[in-house]
Length: 351
Image 1 (tube, one colour):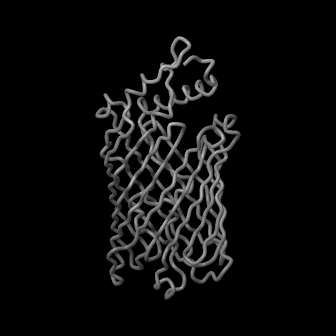
Image 2 (cartoon, one colour):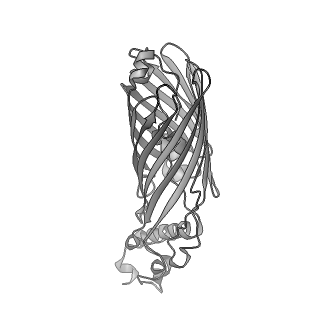
Image 3 (cartoon, rainbow, N blue to C red):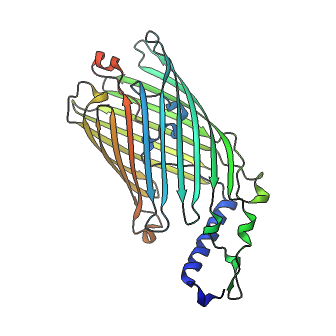
């Protein structure tokens, strides 16, 4: 088939995108899934956050769509369930467990990443009022990554004015799978009924599982460890207003990410029991060197609905028209009857 029987621009564009894709796949170590509303996916951030909340059960869901103005949208969605397993009311310490699943699809080649994780964490309370705690979490999971080679075109398939399918694509496996191990630690301190903070550190891909789409290098390319640090606080600045600043830093191989900002929650219902109070929130964030982030939503009787949007400020601003990613997150925490007994729960983790 010669060029005048083909849409030249279409194939040149796909060839360029395919070349970029294969370069990313075979010469760079992959990056993990991440979200703007990182509190919407707590266990992907730190296994020690498993069961770290005021309540009996937590269910979360999150959806992200980005780069639709540049190429085939990058779509990520996920969900999780976690809860305390064994809890002694007299001692306060408890063990918690949870499961989560995340799926990411990106680009013209339909690059897919399916991850299933199981987490366990132990929460040890300290202090005369049990207002301090240290948590240690472990996590293990299975990941499967795949790419649709039939949807990609390669530079060396265009030869002497003609199109010859096959060549570079034949050197690739369409699917890879591996197991991963993660761990984390978290410190929380409720200084008073109106202020509490948390600090956490986590390591992901500690076993550096081997992954590569190249057939000859599948045992040579390891997934880089991802290390992150989270700092957050909850300050009940008034009877109805609470301020929730947070900071996230994470690195993986040559990539780094740093986000800082704050969320402001205003209670419009009965503020006596903050864990189930009706309120609205808005937040402003900055991902250094990349984007400005806006979040907003509401909370009601244990339910939380959040929306997030990224305004791109990086070098891709012109190509993307400033557009970044859109997110929606859902969360439900089944209230703990003890919160009703003491009326106002201690400030819990931002994450």
